[in-house]
Amino acid sequence: MLAQVRSYTLFGLDAVPVTVEVDVSPGLPSYALVGLPDKAVEESRERVRAALKNSGFPYPQARVVVNLAPAELRKEGSHFDLPIALGLLAAQGVVPLEALAGLAVAGELGLDGALRPVPGAVNLALGALGEGKKLLLPLESAKEAALVEGVEVYGAESLLQAVAYLRGEEEPRRVEPDDPVAALEALDLRDVKGQAKAKRALEIAAAGYHHLLMVGSPGSGKTMLARRLPFLLPPLSQEAALEVSRIHSAAGQILKGLVRTPPFRAPHHTVSYAGLIGGGAIPKPGEVSLAHRGVLFLDEFPEFSRDALEALRQPLEDGVVTVSRARASLTFPARFLLVAAMNPCPCGWYGDPERACTCTPASRQRYVGKISGPLLDRFDLVVEVPRLTPAELARAPEGEGTEAVRERVLRARERMLARQGRPNGELAGKALREHVRLTSGAENLLQAAAKRMLLSARSYDRLLRVARTIADLQGAESVEENHVAEALAYRKTL
Image 1 (cartoon, rainbow, N blue to C red):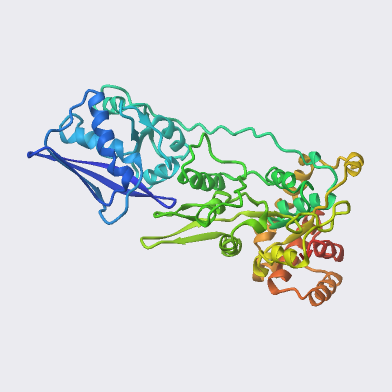
Image 2: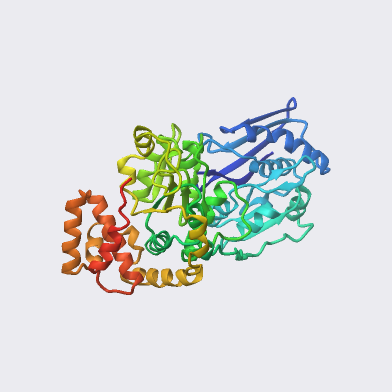
């Protein structure tokens, strides 16, 4: 008998429909799995055999052929265990074929028949929603899939329970959406003593979504500042939360609820090119995509590989990253706020008032030269973060807390969205010129600065965006001279 079970394979962020066809026919006992399976899918044979036996179901002593259609599409993952097992039972008449109609199935089997969670449950649910099918998953994955509105999701704890559902012996356990909002404890800006200019740069970056580079000696507070930036950003909208959750689910994370707070990713400088940008035989999202709608923090910036850093240039401009392989070319969202931190030299003490720098001018030049001009040109804000002495730390004012700064950021962001529908950091071309609204004094100052500093067209536009954000933080309709002057203060050269 032939049985067909609907499932999906993850292809980037998309759940591509796959029909699991199981044919059991007379002949010498054998098992053939076709349809471009990867190693995890090939090993499903032993997991399925043991799960059927230990759950009390028969394993066919006949010729078994399992086909994963379409045959030309590469399949990967252990989530084909459950559809293969149900297909074998349906082909033997243990499960009625009509019970599988209108149902999509995915799940990994333990040897005892228990169902284990699978990655990409949100993406699987979106695939089922697009086809108008119900979805049967392991219970933990079903809770994640239920976050997608409009799809019927059922959860099972074991193969035995899944079969009981299909045979009508037990009422299917429908999983209702449960989207708890994680109560993250906000890191307070008051914890960072002094550094008023760096805190101001952080506020501007959060309001307008401007990329920020911090330069300072070890222990000056660069990492502390960066880790507090996500708590200044507005919460994600429902649409953005689903988009971000889809990326994290495809990357293999098990979600307890939608990702509603802007993500913060801080990969080590030894991260590979594929780990940062994305990659694999079937490409998976990298750190730049996992930081989508949030913050990507690169500490020890010059220590990252040159290839990985240069690969950041395209997503910083376009908000997407395209990973091409022989079998496929996939595009992932990558609209992130880049925050980088670096020392002023290899030893870290160049310009420090107390500790002498041991680097030669040539070694310092090589260190700074690891960051190319085109990449450096993509930072809207470059700010120095000097190290404070113990005496300076003791008398440094506490400053504003995160909540007060966040309120100003939210008000400025509301002005931007009401005026142009996007943050200032995403303005370009005609829209940028239309919404900046320079006064005559501000325009004269900007032209003089551009000529003196030899600004590129890209740097000039970024200066305009930063000045517009500073004006929005002050509630000003037009960009004035003081706004341009403050924006120019963040154009530090290395």
